[in-house]
Length: 146
View 1 (cartoon, rainbow, N blue to C red):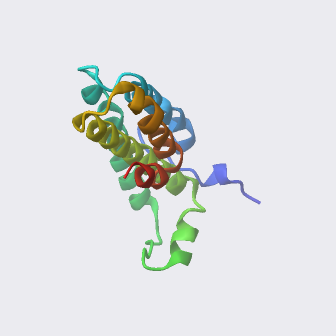
View 2: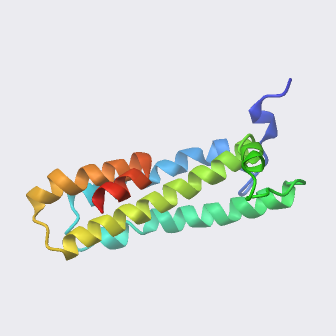
């Protein structure tokens, strides 16, 4: 019986999703900047670096997966999507997608709060929990903020 590791393919420069996975943690300093220093003049720009980096990883990985996949995914059928996510390469691709977009949403939340003139004490009490939920549960933080 083969393990999930046997299904991995090289995605970028010969590296598999498992080998690239630690790079996903590069978002954590950006989340800390949003939580702790949202008004620092460099925060909004620095926070864009991880999503751009992860977007490149995403595109490159998606191309590698599509070139090595014999069965196209039918996104209109749940069973087809479930089947696709049994592949560790697709799971890595999906995780990269979440990591990238959650941070973009978190940045938008922080920027909106600052643009609305929220004071820092209120920011730390109200917005930071929304950012944490956005990091951990994506849409939950977005809905709670709005």
